Every structure is written in structure tokens, then in C-alpha cells.
Length: 323
Length: 250
Image 1 (cartoon, rainbow over the protein chains, first blue to last red):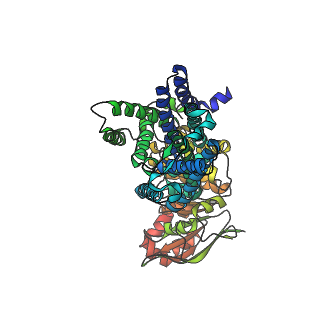
Image 2 (tube, chains in turn blue, purple):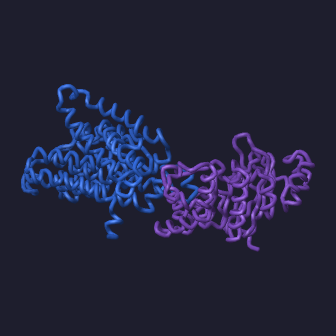
């Protein structure tokens, strides 16, 4: 009973992710599995971004840089160093974490729009750098040799395995998000979000707290990047650092409700569902990004707290379950 | 009598403006020091210097026998200094309890969340916000926000409390409540520096008073001495008769 009380905010998020895993397994349909994979990937990325954006209040417009960078490191290790997928995923996450640590020391002293602009700059600079970096294949990127999949029971089996790893990463992301949200460290982050100067006066060591929030929000995207490009078979600068994907992540976080554990998960779910419809519909397929732009505008104007934030505000009784 | 805080020859400039000139005083443990002066005299700037927000260009600030002149605000907080803000700074989207827990968690006692929640409830009871613990801080009115500022600072269980105009904007019964609270805090052994414009209050509560005018420390002494000091009367009270009148008020 006590345990259930303590972790009740985790129940709904785990149920959502659980359902996403069981659905393709039960239907045994590869197309459903790929759909679920995309949603789980979005869940993992959006939940990670939420640690920085939702809890700490620092909007990162270029968060996809950690996904791309981790992916590159992972694929390099898989092809050139013949590391196993597991080791490559861990290393991808670690590299993105280190990158975030170094970047954080430099740009986390900026606030508001200046920080957001700097993160866009970093993403673009990273793409330009990788484009000219021969070790990572320059503009053509890195392509996996098909024989790599043999170690994982062939390509078909590797897809299956990737799906379960993705589910594990999504679960890890939301558990991490929950732990941060309910910890003392998280309280410090929320204080920074609300009023950084007041937080500092109350003793929150803001430079450290912000740096660790940035690092924590970068690790899982790095791991997801390795997994995605492993499954994809190759990585190129254009696919690794797409700015529009960063913005889509922002929409997901804001749609569901920034600063909540469940919000980004629902946001990722809803946005990917909408996107799936838009790209296949005749009317919207060419303008699906404009629709996300319009959506972002509507959220910012009318429900800045997102769906979960709105519910929490309207029905305080839900606050206990909607962490 | 141990000296808790010692301010030595502090100078602070903002561009061409000399905001503080050679401010020097010692504050013994357990006392209330009143800091007064006309608008723009540099009172809040002095707080910011003591607090580590704007380190001074010259001079030393010694807190609990350590030189903290160049320390960051969070370092000061972790050494046992807490303050309230003249313009209230609530963490709007957090509950009242969470606001106060921040103070307890990151102050010099470095409490964990469980203890912090307990301390928060105690302190909120003390400042009279017990019924509002689960409300969002943004939904409080000004007087309540001032109490919240006080509660956050107290939850850190500081050695030194800096109160920046906690009475401003309050009505007379709220002022009386707040003064009682300040006296109770002193009974707990917490040393206080208070900036105040409400003369009656500051004269009654303070053990000693420092007067600033255009960044210069023009007088220092007991409330009675300050009220009779001609420089102070000239700079601050303007009319000597008014000074007497203010003292007789209580």
C-alpha cells in the first residue's frame, strides 16, 4: 500500500508504455511494431527533453543534437571498432552526456531566448562539423555492413530486438523523469524554473543543478540515436541533426504538458498519431510541419501548461495521480 | 559577545554612481540591526553585497569568521544566511509548502525532502499560513506572499536573517503581526538585519541602527541616539519636530 502510494505517479506512464509494447506483440504485425517503435522513440526523447525544459525551464531548440551525436559515436564504434550493440548504446549515451556537460558549462549561463538560440546554433554547428569530419564519413556518413546484423540473429530478428530495447529506453526515460521530478534535486530544478535568482538566494547551487539537468536530458537521446541508426543501417548528417525534429519534440512536450511526467508521454503519443495521419492524408502530406507549427502556436496561446497541466489546474484532486 | 557579521569598508559602484562608500559595522550575535535611510540610499545594495549578489569593489564581509566577500549567493545560503526580498519572489507554480521546502532543503542544514516537509509545516504554522500549504504560491495576496518570503527564509534555520522591507505594503494590523513575528524570531536566537521605512517599527524593534544616505554611513547607534542625531534628522527625517513626534507615537 505504501509502495503504491509512493509510486502512484508512475502508474499511468508505465501503463501507456506497457500498452505500446504489448500491442504489436499481440497483433504480431510488423507495421504496428514499427509504429509503436516510432512512438516509443518519441516518448524517450520528449521525456528526456522535459527534464531540461519542463523541470528546469530551459528551452532547448536543438536537443536533437544529442540524438545525432550519440548515433554517430555508436555507429562508428559498431563499424570501426566492432563493438557490440549494447556497448555502443551505452557509449553513445555517455558521449552525449559528456557533450552536454561541456556545452552546459558554456551556454547554461544564458537565459531565456538567448539559451534557446544558442542550442539551435549548436545543432547547426555540429551538423556542419560532422559534414567535414572524415572519421565519421563526412557528408556520406557511416553505413553499417549488413553482416553486423548476423550477430543478432539476422536482420528480421535485429528489428525485433531493437523494438524491445527501444521500449526499455522509453521506460528508462520515464523512470528517470519520475525520479528527478520527485527528488530533492528536482525540487531545486523547479525552483530554478520558477525564479532562478530566488533559487540561488535560497541556496540552490544553480550552475551545477542546471548542468546535471542538461546532462541527464542528453544521455537517453544519445542511446536512442545509436539504436535508431543501428536499425536504420546508416547515418548521415542530414538525418542525424534535423532541426525540425527538435521542434517536433518541443510540440510534444508542450502539447502533453511540460513539467509533468505523464505529459510528454501523452504528447508524444498524440503528436505521432496526428503526424501518422497527416503524412498519409492527401491534403496535409506536404504541409504537416505547418500543422505542427500552428499546433505549437495554439498551445502557447491557449493552454501553455499543456493537456496534463490544464487538467491538474482544473481538477486539483488529479494532482496525486498525474505527477 | 561573538561577532556574527562584520562589514569592513565596503564600497560599491555602478558605473559612475557610488552606491556604497566605506560602510563599516559589526553585528553581534542575537541582535536586531535596523538599516534605514531615504530612498536610493543604498540599503538594498548593501543587502545584495552582504548576500553575494553584487560583490563589492572594495572592503571585506566576514560572516561567522569566514571571508565571504566574493562568495556566490548560494554559498552564503549554505553557510546560514537567509533573506527576504523587497519585491516578493514567490515560486508561483509551486505550492506554498514546496516553496518553503526549497528553503529548508538548500539552506545550511541541507535537509532531505521528508524533514523539509516537516519543517515547512512548522514554519508555515508559525507565520500563519498553515491553511494555505497546498495552494499555489502565485495565488496568495501580497501580505501572504510576504509571510511566505519569511517562511522560506526561516525554514533554512539561518544564523543571519536579512529582512528587506517586510512591512512595506501591509496595513497596520498586519504590521503589528509582523513585528511580533520578528521579535519571536529573535527569541529563537536568530540575528537579524532589517531594512525598514516604517519608523515606529524599526525604532521599537532594533537594538542598534545604521543610517545610510547617498551610500554613506552617516550614523550608527541606539534608536534613541539616532532619533536625536542631527545629521540623521536633516538627511532623513527633515523636520526635527517630526522626529520627536514619531518617537512619541508609540
